[in-house]
Amino acid sequence: GFTHDGYETGEMVVQTIVPDSPASAVLQVGDKFISVRGVEVGSDTMDRLDFRGKAGEAVEAVIVREGESMEISVVRGTIASTITKADMLEWMREQNAEDWADENYTAHEVVGSGDVIYAWTQAVNTDETSGASVDVHTVSRFQFNTDGQVVALANINESRFALEQMGYTITR
Image (cartoon, rainbow, N blue to C red):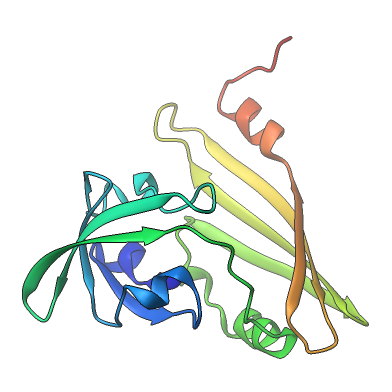
């Protein structure tokens, strides 16, 4: 696994690499992705880049490292989370709604007890096709082990209602 700043800049430059992950054997911080599985990297293609999938499958990409273009192949694998409960709480406290991709994002409440934290958030966006405002509330449940690492994450949200706000119906 690795992190990048592509959603903010339109360029996918590796910022961090998860130690002992499949990516750690191939990537270096500062590598810039040019294409992933034949899809050129750009602000309009970030959501179509195919990194996730079945463990053991290879992902071919083209990167630039120190000014030189090179083809790489990373085998997908299972990655253990390295985020601790303290890290997650600090990250949530420091968030600024203006930094989120949603037009309007609100963290209404974060509560916890023992090894579990619940976060209630709301996202408001405009549907590009209809122009309708779409409002979705989500409750996320984070569970941590005794080392403070995330071991489970679950969400419940109003996806069906969001689709109905955009004019879609669910039929059988």
